Image (tube, rainbow, N blue to C red; front, side, top):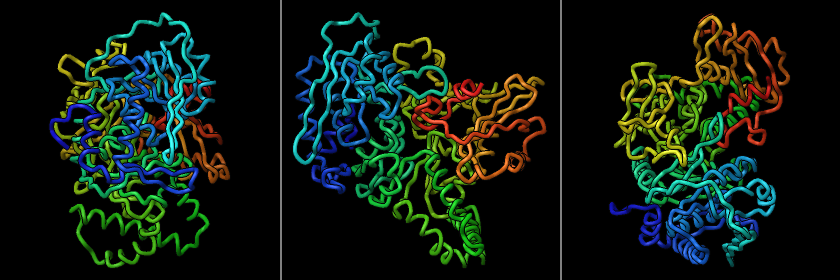
Length: 559
């Protein structure tokens, strides 16, 4: 990629010019019932067509355009067409509630909305009456034949919407963080923020033109947008779009990707399925799996230079052939880089899959940082850490409280329309205050808690609920958990059990939780257990689009 590239659309044009006939994207055609390859020159032609159609609408530089599409070549094409016109794209989470999408449309001052489903507009229309929205465009795209952008709604009379700040000249996108409390904030990321963050992320592990990414995290999420979209564009790799969140396992089999950007929930679900199979397996098979795990993690540590080869490793090739290879095959069989971010991955699950030869690299970031701050490297992978800081990015730990501060080229321009909120997190020295408690050991970053999530019991003891929740989530019967206890003399746990867990008595589950918490101090014990059978979902407003639990809303829901 040329060093003179300053915008995301220039990045796209540079890729088209250099590799016009290389496969850029793959998608599953419902019409043909098979996977279709799209080359860079093909999507470039479609971007130019969309650019012409959009330019027929009165478009001012800096005007916001909201995108409500599933991950697809169309998403990429609309994004690039808008950016080429100097517009600012505002991604919407495709499966979000209408109320949340309406808030983003209204708050961002978006004038144009592009979507695919008429039903979504039907749900949105009554909620955006007071917004600045002027035009809704339905995209009808058939890559085998035609494309159409059709206006399905246009405001008859201008509405006096609340005034919005003039966007900075290099603003590329406003990504609304799916915060666990309150309304989301619009993070303003410039072209430079994303380009520099992509360059920094490329230093973590080499990406080759022959690599294939499987894209299934929403493109409205900063991690997928930067690392799963612009980074492979920079490297010249191929991106295949999963059909849906429900078909990921089959898509992995079909595409056999070499790179996967994911969140811990994927491995938690795969681990649950494995535990379920083991429960029904013979004693010999369970023994083989445990042996394969232990031999595999030792093999991993030997490769990392942190363990010595021993006689027990003689069994590793056979155990890997019988067990490890089957686990890798379930994930496509070709993965060489797996980036896990968005939330902490339970260490026991990370160790298990590393032992099976799944190359998981845990990282850390915030939307406000572009989003990547740090990541483990293949040759220096400490799975209980979130890795080493990216080049050109600085870290600082506050002496009072241990809060992590970050400074670098990926730091956002600010929160859209909320300068006072911006000033709360970015100080005069340009340090972004993350709200995370952290420490650095051997050049690796470790996140140890959240400042705001600390519970203070009525006896004055302070507890990090995240630490306890991570410990409890290692139980194979438990899918979700929230620890409560602010201002009370003891802790309570709300746990969502899976299908296996529903067959377990409350007393047995309580004992299992107690054993997981044996290393915690005496005051950090769960004395009240509430067992729930139904999962907390995005539709209920209890989980963010990136699968983080909305703690305050859950506690209010079960008040």
